[in-house]
Image (cartoon, rainbow, N blue to C red; front, top):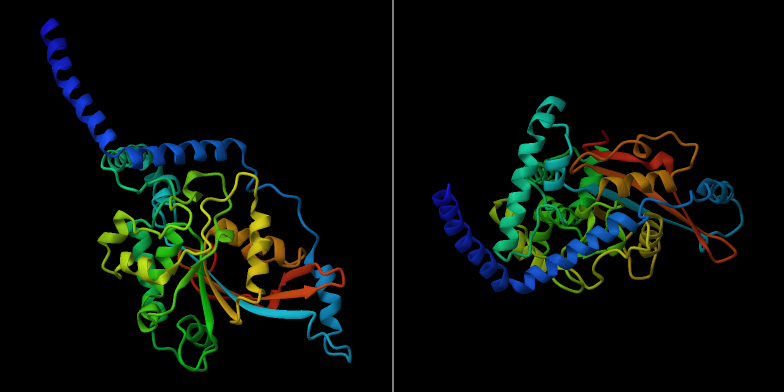
Length: 363
């Protein structure tokens, strides 16, 4: 017994010394990770990101004005419209660990949950010890399956369509074809969304090397979970994850460094904010003077998108977007209407007749 204990101590001691040495060697990253962990804990306990008072039905304000739009009154400065494309990210490592997904049965998910959780925790420990600014849980990147979905999206966008097809017209805008109206690419600050835009629209970005995807803080996902917290410090260029770096879809790191505009990235969403505030900020941005394009392509997240449909579609409208999620890498198009009231406060509404599935749909 004494010999066994002595052998155990002789093994554990150098292991602990090595562990401490690795942590000290990577001290700046460790301190940042500790800060991220503390922020994630605070956010989990105290945030109200999914809590807000249901706003007024936008159709109460918008529909009466729309009905008079064709009359003699000049509403040119009252009503504006933009076409929005929601593009949901590919599956993330967080999804892989905690969500069943449509690619596996409930039984397989339950059986593999504990082994999968252990694997992800051990990998997180490895990331910390190796000093990498990365994470399985925080700002969870696209998983291997997620990148396969991104590649499928890219293939869809480069297919040959019949020009008379309505989907072809949307794809022409999405891919910024010469005869299509101009569009602007924007994305959430979370890596899985940026990777989806970078990989899914790689042919567009390669053809237009001066174009940049603008990262908007207002698109950060609506949730208290740590996977919705950005790992990228304020005003810092986003870095490709270990999974992105291994991918052959495109050179993610090069795209991130050269074609992702982080000028508006202010770090993480504040604890005192909520999804409604960010959705309204997004609407304000879309109709601001800085966005000249009439078409905006948005790389983002399922709960944020579903909340947007719930908030800005007429409340009596029964639409799957209010209850279901956009599938991973799915694309949904719609017209967003802005009405500027006499008080100076804008009201935004999705035209319910304009909602179209371009790729994937809801589930």
